[in-house]
Length: 494
Image (cartoon, rainbow, N blue to C red):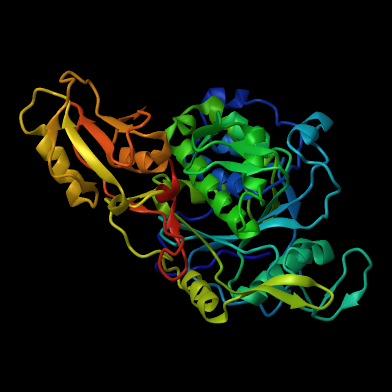
């Protein structure tokens, strides 16, 4: 059984500290729910949510009563020659493709047919910094080229020498233990805890939190999963959220594109949990925790006290505290005899990435609190005519100057609007330039989007009395720094 890394500079709360006596009414907590073992990519999301939920500090009693519902595995049994422990905590999150608990109706509706492969559908390393102020999530593509350590096949009992395979196949061949050993061998990062979720209660978890908001600049359609989202802002319930995180045929990016969508969903879920008041509502907290813990298999060392200690140290966790990336790929379509087409990691960049995890260093370049919001179109590509929709002298000039200073191509010739009594700033646009309009509206917090057919390529801003400032924005950039890292608050809806 692994032990979390220790360090004299640790600021995390001590483990297993005595708990204060629970109030009398805590004794009336509900009976533990029926055991469930669901799955999926949100598995990662779901498990990360446990930590966030625990940070509410609502109740050791509630967490303890639910601890028994977590199925336990021992992925660290008899493991030797492991990497040295670094600072912080490393959690391996995997999602298997189990779907046995999903009803026939839901399987048809959300395109979940077919036999499961009993392999990992998603693999992520979540690094929680030693000061508990940052979570770094690194996605490991399931088709990554890997070489297993020597092991015993969990089905046949046959002794295997190390051999090449796709990373997700390690689970089918040797279960959680071989998965952990293979990941440690490839990354030289010591895994402290193992968490596994399958597909079934992902939908329930999303439904319990009231859905998760996703924004997309382009339509997303995938005939395999049934996903069909027009461009814009959407609140996804469980089934539609499952389609979103499973979609692989939205574009030509396949699994790499899907991993980015999974990361966006994780950031959006954290935003939902930390901004909606769910964490402060004991009944909601209990319901969400039940849904989360009912979908998890964990190592024996990750129990109630560990979750609560980690949660207390992360009370101020938010989307801006999280950063997401995918291990750098050096060669696509790397053919391996008997294995097929794989993804080969970039040896230099991936080593630097995992070294940063081992040293407990942030992956993203430092950006201040006022960092630019990510938008689909760069402001330098958007032409804007400003109109003053109020009777306040000089407002049009002020808005024009503020937009120009942040990169928008204004006319530098603001005029008075025909209507001088608007209550709210308006972004008027031709529907053919809807992506530019959404980018401009993001820069004007609280503004209203208004379609004007035939307006043409120049967008119009009718400044209202609500105007306060222009928010900095920048175009989407898949290469944030060396590792392509984005922060949670940069991919959440504006």
